[in-house]
Image (cartoon, rainbow over all chains, first blue to last red; front, side, top):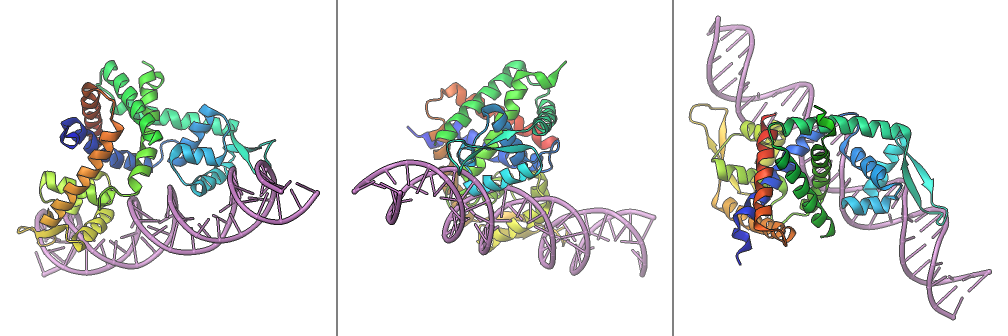
Length: 144
Length: 144
DNA sequence: GCGATGTAGATGTATAATGCAACTATATAG
DNA sequence: CTATATAGTTGCATTATACATCTACATCGC
C-alpha cells in the first residue's frame, strides 16, 4: 500500500503545515491578555487541576525548563499559585487563582469569538466534525 | 445567537490551541533536511511559481523582513534562485532549483509518512474529511 | 541511619524565529 | 525634476525554546 501517495494524507500534511503558519501568526498578537503559553497552561490547569511542571511539560511536549519559566511568569502575574506537595518537599502543583480564572475566561471568549468568525458559514455538522477530528488527531499526536 | 457558547466552537478553539503546541513540538526537530520555514516556502514556490518576498510574506502572514531572511538562507543553500523582474529593477521572483525540488520532495515524503502514522486506523472518509476541513479553515484564515 | 543514586524543579547559556524601525535602491506621480 | 511610494535588506530587540548544569529533597540498599 502506497501510503505516501494517498491523496488525503497529502492534503492533510500540507494543510497542517499551512495551519501552523497561519494560526501561529494569528495568535502571536495575543487575543485577550494572555499569551499562548500562558493560555494553554491555565487551560490545562483549569481542566485537570493542579499539576507540577514536569507533567505539564510532558502534556505539551515541551522541555521542563521551558515550562518552569512559563510557570514562574504566571505566578509572578498572580495567575497561578504554588501548592506544595505534602508528600514531596521538592514538588508542588500549580493551582489557578481567581484572577487566573478570570483572565482565562476572558481570553477564551476572545479566542472563541475569533474562531466563530472563521467558522462563519460552516454547517453545524462541519464544525462538529472538525472539532472531533482535531481532537482525534491530537490524541494520537500526544502518544507518539 | 450565543456563538461563544457553541460546543463545537469551544472544541475547535481548544483543539486548535493544542494542535499548535503539539505540531510545533513535533516539527521542531526537522523531518527531512528542511526546516519548517524552508519547507513551506519551497512548497509555495513549487505550487505557485516564482514570487517575490512581499507576496510570500502576505501568503504566510509573516513580516517581509522575516521572509527576506528565509529567502536569503534558501538561496545560500542553492534551493532557490533569484529571477529578476524585467519590469522592476527592485523586484525579483524566487524560483525553485532542481536541488530545491529534490529536497522538497524528500522532506515531503518524510512528513507524509509521519502523518500517515498519525492517521493510522482512521477511515478513508475521516482522512478525506479532515483534509478538506483543514483546507476550508485555512482558506478563511488567509483572507482574514 | 547513612551513603549512593534518582528526581523535581530552577537557572545559565545558546540558538532560532520573529517584528519593528531604519535604510537603500528603484519606480511612479505631479 | 522633485516628491513620494514601494521592494527588499539589515540592525536591533524580544521571545520561545532546548540542553546542560545545579540545588534540594527523596528513596533505595545496606
